[in-house]
Amino acid sequence: MKTGYPDRRLAWWDARRGKRNLSVEDTEIDWKAYMAQVEGVINGTYDYTQLQGDTGPLVYPAGFVYIFMGLYYATGRGTDIRMAQNIFAVLYLATLLLVFLIYHQTCKVPPFVFFFMCCASYRVHSIFVLRLFNDPVAMVLLFLSINFLLAQRWGWGCCFFSLAVSVKMNVLLFAPGLLFLLLTQFGFRGALPKLGICAGLQVVLGLPFLLENPIGYLSRSFDLGRQFLFRWTVNWRFLPEALFLHRAFHLALLAAHLTLLLLFALCRWHRTGESILSLLRDPSKRKVPPQPLTPNQIVSTLFTSNFIGICFSRSLHYQFYVWYFHTLPYLLWATPARWLTHLLRLLVLGLIELSWNTYPSTSCSSAALHVCHAVILLQLWLGLQPFPKSTQHSKKAH
Image 1 (tube, one colour):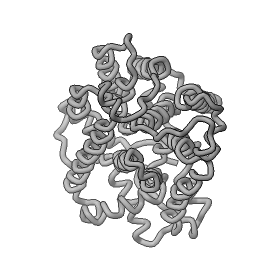
Image 2 (image 1 turned 135 degrees about the vertical axis):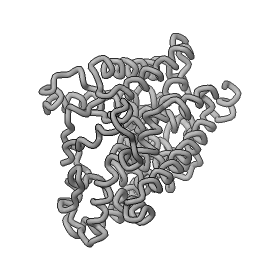
Image 3 (image 1 turned 30 degrees about the horizontal axis):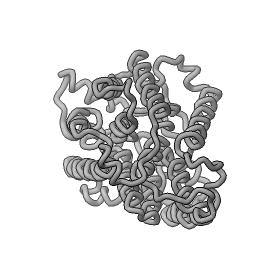
């Protein structure tokens, strides 16, 4: 279990305060641990319980191993951190391109907001270009998957979605939304082959490790019960540590998460007038004639599914900001809530950014983050309007 970070994580904060000069080598955080973990695989160790780094055991699925194995060789066995940061800078630009392609098809967000997405987040730039976390790798694959879904290339979309999950499990927060879309588009039988792509890719990628120690691989790389340290939490600082670590609190968050997902699925995502069970039928046999999914239906469902998971997460660490940073403008501007003006939306974005840039987190910063999340959830629930029947109509409305 990955239980915390070494003291060197605090070095760059000291540097920012002028205590010492910051070198390129000081900026990486988990990079050395990643390189040690994949080096174990390169040396022939396929038992996940034996793969370790200086921050703990390997806790990510097999896709992470293969991608960072490539980075291991591209950076001189992980020693050329400058090269690694250049690669991640390209990854950052690729992420922006994929996100802009998504937003271009939805036509919901005013152009001036993209300035804040590109230039106003010190934290996101740090996570991508300096810290070399695996979270940006998972998210760029996720946004590539969404672009394929918007192009109605569902097989490829599911393939890249599964590949993103194989880098880091947080992508599973989008899974309820993806399942809903697959059922809406294809019905139960039609969705099975697409779900088979997702499951099959996980098996293929993990096969060397599954053959060696299947229990060890599954328990380490898909550990849903992993404990987090209170010292690194961004979202629950105002709670007593005993409550933060209590299993009943975790179960309550899970129950709230599932309940809200169900409510959105029943009352906001599914709006044909038929029972939700009608999604299990073949689309041609439903009472209401099936309509092609619009870009806004796809993006709204996926982004909302992920955001609900973020709101009820057991703990958010600083690198987790990229899990939803690029979706925030859509979540704030996609619904025409009159009470939420452009200025108030920008204020919410600013408070969220401030909360993520407060180190260490405080009771006030955590509380402010939850208030902002609640505002977004409220406007998603109250302001959601019927989706346009066509993309063209959406563009005219915009």
